[in-house]
Image 1: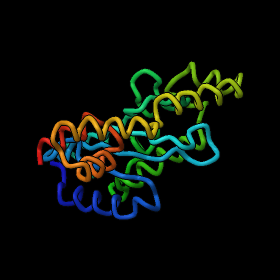
Image 2: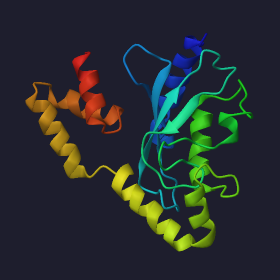
Image 3: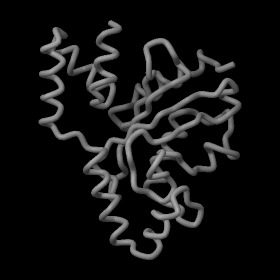
Image 4: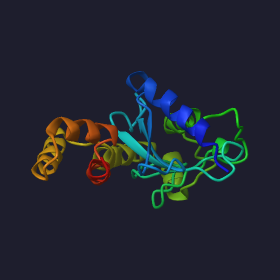
Length: 195
């Protein structure tokens, strides 16, 4: 069975230094700590810089003795991430997991993977082939995907705030809820309705 006391402690630790790390983990629903949503910033100096990437996290019954199941909810162009499903090829999410690791260390490892792709052990063979044979096209495509899928234009945020305020929610609450869920309007609405 999932150690929910540990999960709660990990969430607090992870979110406590959000301003420094940019990494955040929140429950996907209000009561289920076995299904979480993580966010990581794109690493500086990479085609992912400036993007905010959402990662769907499911904790198996054996957590922390079994690794969390993680996949990108944000589309990302990377040799070790499926461009179709978001599945991640990373050893610590498989056979190199240890109960000493945490959700934060796993997310930091995913972020590090964005900085240092392993095209010889790909999750997406097409992306890996492009990375190895035509690096500049890979970088351009990865940047494009980051712009298209991992960046929220500020105008979009204002439109979301306006829409949710028109539904009768207080503006300050709408803004803080949108920030807490990484700008996901549907998730924000879900959280606002459950208040």
